[in-house]
Amino acid sequence: MAVIAVDPWGNRSPTSVISFGTPANTPPTLVREGDTAVSIPYNETRTVAFLVSDPDSHGFTYELQDPSGAVTPRKDDERLYLDIRNYKRVPGSYTARITVSDSFGASDAASFDFTLQPNLPPVPNPYTSVRCRRPQSSRPPQVSTTKFRRR
Image (tube, rainbow, N blue to C red; front, side, top):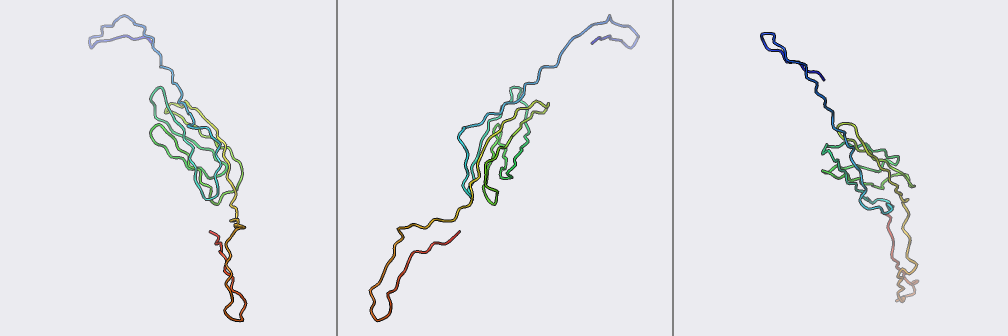
């Protein structure tokens, strides 16, 4: 860039050439905390956490791609929590993708796999206690069993 100074009386300075550059923008980094497989039983929630850091100390935004519709993101300072709730969702294995971007457009992304388990009916215990009472009359014996209720 060339700079010339002019005062109110029309005096001009010699031309000065100044060179400068914009510092490079380092993208944020996205690191998953823990790497265990995520399998969520029906009507339960599990959380996947990511640490987000930006060497340039820029804030970040995020974008979530979730084909299951079960993931809810939460942002907390330098962490991003993804709560996966398995309720009224189609069971199966899914891959979600999270992308974080700083205010200048640099970004990082990560994918993670999870499984939504089906809603299974309760399984009765074959060793359920059964009580038989001795008849006190000519009526047949009374039998009581433990009953299971479906939630």
